[in-house]
Image 1 (tube, rainbow, N blue to C red):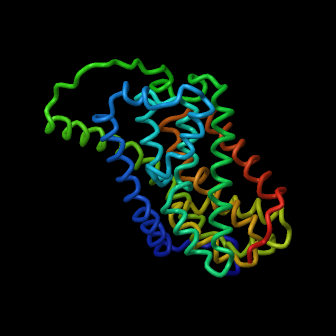
Image 2 (image 1 turned 180 degrees about the vertical axis):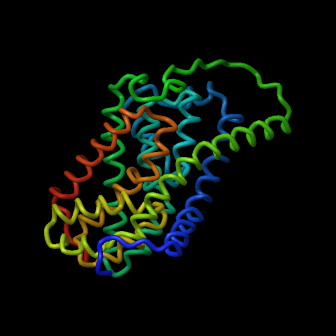
Length: 304
């Protein structure tokens, strides 16, 4: 490709459908879980299960992905429902940022993708880095006002009522389906917008432009973070793409693997379902600084 930009409608259509078909199953899983939470999880039960200590709640939120693994495509609708049920904002943020990576499915896929490139080390570093990022961001969010972070319909703290649900099993299932359908329509609009922008970059911009950046650690980390954001890959498969960048150091690949699941073009749109625009800007800026600082300056060895 001689030019930096070249548009092909057939390439665009193929890549767009690939992203959509990869992401929709995880969105469906997320909205189904969201509907079940809405109908079958009593708020009083959630309140009893959560630790009263904020630090413990954040750590628990960061570990929830091991029990409730969710891709970033579906996690936002689950978080919205959990917030409505009374999950503390800081715990929700930890779960939101950690679950797409700190889960057994992603651990296995990462190990498989990096065979011959230090698979165990890459898997453990990815899990640890993502967990640390989630805990740090959630700890900061703990000190922010809900009204500054959340959309108006979520900002008010939910009132937890302890009442008996007299609906029949069929009525509850129907209510779960209705809730899931509404969530699916909400998130799909934002997902398609983000997928369109990502596809345009993937198919039309000459990605060989970033290859000369591999020799400098800071430049390689920054370029891989930017690439992760625009490629909008799913966290269950992004390791197979990262492993192909053999010329880049392990720190840059870890930046790709930890930044993409929390900041990409489709997520920027989907985050608007839960957060205020000003907080989304604040969150993205904070994640850019945090991920870049950890990956560019920590003494991460090269596992190649």
